[in-house]
Image (cartoon, rainbow over all chains, first blue to last red; front, side):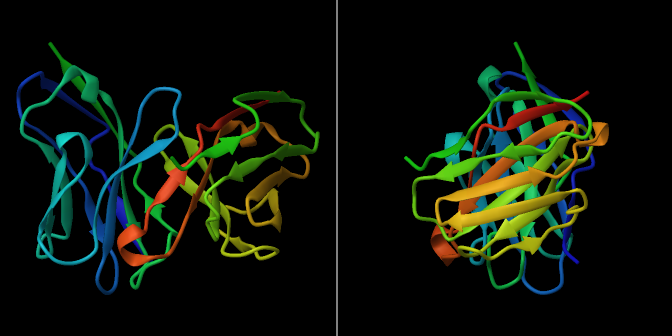
Length: 114
Length: 114
């Protein structure tokens, strides 16, 4: 069975500082990995995904994620955080070979302060 | 832009009532999903459908059923609502298409069962 873990319920960072939101995965075979963001009172929005290829994936709003096979991790990063990045972030894994049936993590609340 | 529309933003029902949550997407997507979102538990898959009149159980189908009579519409049914079904319900749609593969979410329905 596939699963993802987000070890931090909340991450606090000052505006302008780099941010990292952590995610580890467990899947047999090659993983399909995703990051989604949820702003208050909204549904989830797609940020980026890793299927194959470069280990550094670039996505929307200046976010990127680093795939590390040996550590089974897919951490979300941004070089300089904005207050408007404050939101709930979800990591997800899809079935090997594709398909939209995603398994989501528990979410990490990101708070960016002035 | 892809639009996934959920019929109600907030819904209050009584224990034992039959509840219908409606979801409509306008992008001719084959795949549709129902998740529930609870604090600390993330998103959990209830049911999904890869085609009209097709349905498959997700991870937590107990107490729920679904209907997909038309490609664009996917309904979630609570046969006899219970208080432990108080939650945020999210509908999503997408295609299994490699590079274009991602989910699009509705804004959610916050259901309270009293």
